[in-house]
Each structure stands twice: as C-alpha cells, then as structure tokens.
Length: 440
Image (tube, rainbow, N blue to C red; front, side, top):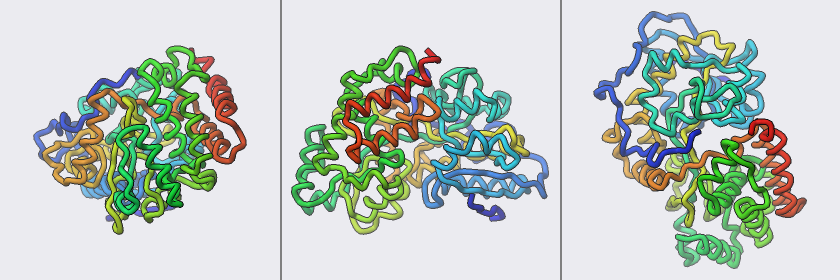
C-alpha cells in the first residue's frame, strides 16, 4: 500500500440498524452504487484522519478502502491516526486550519458534529448524497446522526456526515473467571450486584472502568436508561422538555455508582484510568466484567487468548446507549473535497462493509449473506435484540459541546469521594442547563 501513517433525531425506529434487513443494493458486484471513481488523480494526495486501532474492525475496513481508493484513483493516501479524545478536543480549530485533513472520522451528536456543522467548520454533503445515493443505504434512525439543523441539533437539516457502521454498549464478561469462582453470569439487575459482591468477597474487583474517559459515563447513562422511557431520552437528547435532575433516572444512576464505589465493585483507580487501561485490564484477565462498546469487540476477538469471554446486553432495561457509528466528515479547509467524497463512497462498498462485519463490526450497508463468521453473528444477534425493542438511545455526552469532559469530571468526583450523588447531579444539571436552556 502507498499510504503512510503519521502521528498525529428523531426517535429511532424499531429495527433501524437490524443487520438482517441490510442489503448492498447494487447486485453485489463490488462497485460503487453512485458515481464511479473515474479520472486519473496520479500525483494527488488525500489526507485521511481516523482514530480506529489497526486491528479493530473499522481499522481493517478502512485499510481496505484505502487500498481500493489508491488503486482506482492513482492518488496517494496520507493516513493520520489520532486519539478519539484528542480529536474531540481539537477538531473545532484543526478542521478550520491549514493543517486540516481532507476527510476525517468524527464523533456524532449535537455537541460534536452538530456544533461543527452549526459553525461552518465541516462542509454540507447534500450534493454528494444525491450523487452517490448514500441516503438509500441508511435505514431510518441511522440518518439521525448524519443530519443537523442550523442550531446543530441532529435529525433534520442538511447532511453533514456519513455513518457506515453501527455501535452499541454492552457487558463483556470473562467466562473463565465466573467458572473459577462458581459465580453465575447475571441475567437480571439483582444478579449484576450479586455477582459483583461475590467477586469482592473473593478479593477480586469485578468491574473495570474508566472515569477519566468515556466508559464510566456510559455506565452512568445505562443505569439512568434502566429507569427511563423514550420521552426521557427525547428530553435529554432533543431538548423536548426539561430534564428532572432529581428524578428517578439520574438519582438512580449517580446513587448506584456511589454505592458501587463504596462497596469496592469499582476500583478507586478508575479515576485515573483511561479507556485503554480499563479495556486492557479485561483483556489481560484482571477483571471479570467490562461495560463498553461494540468497537472493542474485534479487538477482543484478536487479543483475548487466555480465556473465554462472552457478551450480553445489560439486563432489565429496554434502552441502551448506542447509535449509528462515528461519521466521515469533510472539513471546511479540505484541499481535496471531491476526492474525499470518492473515498467515503468506497467505505460503503459491499466488500469493505463485509470485511467490517466479518472482523467484528456492525456494517450499515453489507449484504448479510457475506457475513458468516460465528463470532460476528453473535454480535449481530445481540445488536438486533436492542433494535427489536427500539432500544438505541444515543450517548450521554451528546447534549452539549463540553458535556463529555463535564461528565467525566463528575464521574471522577464520585470515584474519589469528592462529591455525593446529589452533589454530582447538581453539577451535571448546571453544566447541561448552561448550554441547553437557550435551545428549548
């Protein structure tokens, strides 16, 4: 390969991302469903930025897309890899500078892609959607995170990004550790706490997580969702009405985490752990449970070699964190916007989507007949359970541009014992309302 790596809503409809309903829509000939990548771009360079690990499902798929792109266009890809948190913090400035990549993976949601769309930092892609027919590949619900209005609120307006995989959050468990200690894998909420207490009694910290980065915030949101209904999600994510920060949803989430830290279910070390640290603790067999996203699944299949692991949806809940995956966006300072669109279209091709699925990802435009790996099918089945109950509920940091960092800081406060659950909720309310109050 010629590319080089440099450091660098609408309510979701039931079954919106169900892979049993996906189809390539182009006869499976491997070509683009839209405009062809014709023309000789020899000597041109396309700068592509993303934050997927090379062995992840998305990393493997994007590498294949790069190979196809270079072969068909004659152009060279300058691949710049970064970290999710670094790009989250720098995109507003980076995408509006001379150092901007030509096309980049970016976080979806009101506070991220929506904010950049509203301020003109990423380009609208309406014409490209028409040219390439991308909307036909995005089932109802997936397109929620691709469209933003003039205020940066998702679900309507112009197209600003292209999602080409789905994602959701669930429980990874170390089957060998459960068997070693004679503990049942939990199937209900009471079983979660019973299992964690049983591990603590054996001197094992049961749940690895990170309060410094996203895992603990997503766990907080899952606990809130377990007490919530769709109207609460709409209020929280789409500002349809005020969120009650003393209500049963938020009170249960923060109170439960405070309780779990006190009982030793979550280590005090979580305050300084990154998501990578938390994931490695599970991969290395040091923790029996890890609550995180499907983006880890391909890596688990590659890296977990010393024990059997399983996956399960969080029990006793209808709603689950998840959505269409992160989106490809074209920065306003892209030097090759036309080539960027060609590259995005290639990531939607059947062969790229099939590789994503076979590697443990959740493609949005694959022919499911091409995905036969039993491990991939396990993930698809788990995902479809969520879709069948209309469970995908976005992510906790989406409502404001700063809520990712705000939520993490409050989670660290809970772990460190600096705030009570009630004080944490007051802090979260203040952070949230300082932005959202003007949008209602």
